Length: 304
Image (tube, rainbow, N blue to C red):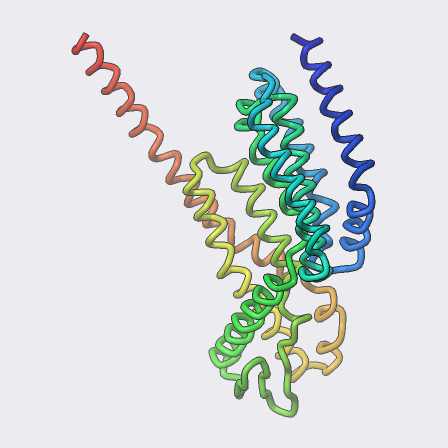
């Protein structure tokens, strides 16, 4: 069995090596992109997290290996077609959309190689770390603009509500907050897209380890969306208060340019009770599920 796994590992690593050679240019562009864009800074971390999670589950993954020629071929063909489309229609797609489609096709090809070497049963066990790789795909430009707009609008509304709640004289015109002696615009750079992506990725990983049911994991991810807006609106309100009543330097200082980590931690703090509640609901349902299973077994025994 160990020799069989070793040979499959060899073939998979060979497959990855060839794909890295073939796709080296877009992958090199991806590395540069992640280093130059705030909303892509998570990309280099994604494969490391994926490999680590796969390593933790390696015993269960490798206990059910087989060749997945049919499913692997289908995915490989899909990835190849997407790669061809990206090259053929790159002038009409635009640089950002072409790049996103190329990286998407590479991830699909990698997953097809995994299924080729280890089979569909192994994929079912390792689906989270494999699907997690899709977070390496840069957000297409048309989608990024909509996400940033939603974060801007939600953050501006939240900051306005918090300032009004605190009794601060403030008016709002779109994305501009009119405060005593100063106007503050919630620009695209203030949308908090970087810390929002970091919080979303953290939630996905925590949900995978802390929760068992798919619907609870999905509920946890959905609950992140309003938290993203609340934590960024709180950041804008805090900076506004400090800039108006303490020192105008706060409007351009560290808290404004690099303070996202503090409010990322605030988002995590808000998530903690949600995770605990979902975990408790799972634990409370386990005895009920066990009783139902025992009752079903007893009924089957009586029927027999």
